[in-house]
Length: 271
Image (cartoon, rainbow, N blue to C red; front, top):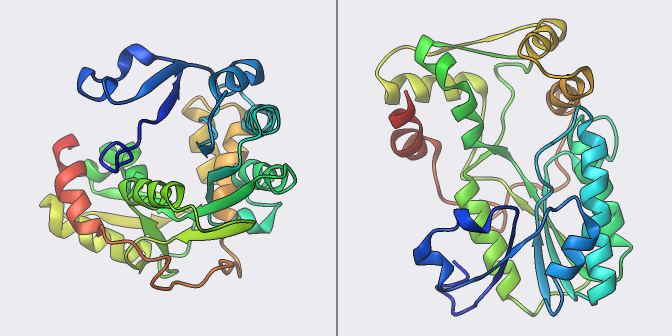
């Protein structure tokens, strides 16, 4: 999106060789690990605006990994006097504590708020692409959650988050601290998601609510370290009882890609 807008962005990646040849001629890839401050500082020299995503957990302690990524982005912003930062956060970060892995994003938000740069926090909803991790369960016709089946929440396509991020980077009119929710096209309950899946994949897909402890045991049996299992579970339990997002749904927070079309185009080929 940035390339199509006429920008030649710098891409921070641990694996520059994985960037396609077609894209590589329009960007400046720099090898850097987001959890290594010295590498990130060197890679962002001369950068005037930064889109930052904390990388997935690489150790048994995901919150510690978030802190290492936070150290990197703050070091880069301060050393290179980067003026604007767009940070990919999550709905739930406004709680600051008690939302599992999202607490790590909240810590990054707080650190960025104090670094002197103009910052936009993208508070994103539940990714459509999380269903790719459940492809086997979708194929078997049964999904499980610890959330009430009739509780609506925002669902969003990552592609739409990319669009909001790109537009925010390109817009030089904003300043200070902003929170920009990215809510997807509509709030959906798990029961509605199951109904949409049933219609699109060609067989019945049910969803059932299970106990927190049952979900925790499933995570542990899958090989997750205890701290990671708690962080994963906390993202659901922490946003379950009485939680209301800081930003209400509006024209500014609603994005276009619908779950039905995403399932047809992205999920069905994996089943």
